[in-house]
Every structure is written in C-alpha cells, then in structure tokens.
Amino acid sequence: MTEPTPARPDRWAILCDFDGTAVMEDIGDRVAIRFAGHDLWRRECDAYLAGAFSFSALLGRIFEPITASAEEIAAFARQVAVLRPGFERFVAAARDAGRPFIVCSAGLDVYIGPVLERLAPELREYLKLRSNHATCSPEGMKISFHAGFEGCGRCGFCKGAVARALQAEGYRVVLCGDGTADRCAAAAADLVFARGKLVRYCGAERIPCIPFETFDEVLARFPPG
Image 1 (cartoon, rainbow, N blue to C red):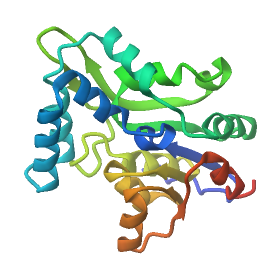
Image 2 (cartoon, one colour):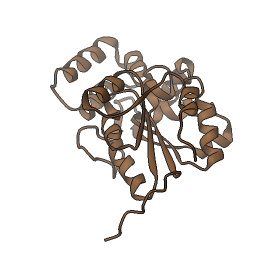
Image 3 (tube, rainbow, N blue to C red):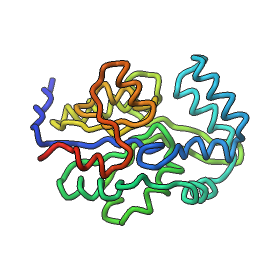
C-alpha cells in the first residue's frame, strides 16, 4: 500500500466552490427557478431542509424536470452570473505560485463552464473544474455524478473526498466555500475561508475558519509560501 506523500508547509492546493462563492449568488438555483419553475424549486428545497432526502436527491429533483437546451442554460448563466470581486486575481496568484486551483462544485457543468469562460484564457486553462455533468434533452435533464469522489454518500460529489485526495498527494488544502455541499471539505481542509451558512456551520462544529466577502480578502490572509 502506497503511503501518502507528507505535505510541505508551503505546498498549497485550492478548492473553491462555485455557487455563492466564485460567483455572487447561487446560479444553480437561478437555473432551476428559470427553467423548472419557482414552485417546484421551493417545494423540493423545503422538503430537503426538512430532512426528506439527501442533497444529491435534491439536485435530481430540481434539475431533472428541465427540458431547456444546454445552449439556453449557458446563455442564461452568462447573463446572470457575476464573479465575486477578486476571483480572477486569486486564480492569477495561484497560477503564478504554481498552486493547483480547482473549482469544485456539486452543481452542474452546463452552467458553470460557460461562466468560467469569461476568465482570461490562460487562467481558464490553468484552473480545473470538477462538478457533476448534465445531459440536456427535450425529455428532461440527466445528471451524472462525478465518479470516484462519492465520499460521504450524501452529496453525490463529496468535496471532502477531493480534499483528502490532494492531501494524499502531499498538498495542504485551502477551501473557499459557503454552503451545505462544502461541509465535508471544511472538515477535511487544512485552512478554511468561509462565508454565508458555512461560517455558522464551522462555528457550530468548532472548525476554525476565516470569514470573507471578496477574494482580495482571501489573498491578503493567504499563508506565505
């Protein structure tokens, strides 16, 4: 059995959530509301919050009724998405330092990829996207969960498993996140920058975190090295 590579103090990798983190709001929710209807989205989200089913099941319930084309969804995402201030500078700093930068999302590539295309080409090429995959058709959307990172078994795509895989390669992991799908990664990461609901979760679970609103704040407090 191969032993994990010991992490060097200055060898960082970055996991960055997309919805509500890399961008200012949850674009997945906006897509579900726009193309499947607010009433369905609200009903399924309320049922999830009441504990009726897992987060991965919620994704299926809000996205699978969508019959719009990938082009329609991409155009809508480009129209409504606003990158969080400092995001492009944060990616550029990671590239200059040779730090892996992974946009890691339990959302769908069909809307995330088109938004990330607005980055400078050399930055878009540098960062990696790991998310769930959507296949669009007039009969409804099919979701394929990212294989190999099932982890907790609740998220469909567990970011905690991604964090642990990077740590096994010898990296110390920084997480930037804001919500439910970031909890497993927050528990696994070496350093957490949090906003929104993730700040409250980290407080309740006694996970140290640094609150932030812009990526310039993250850069200002990023560890040296």
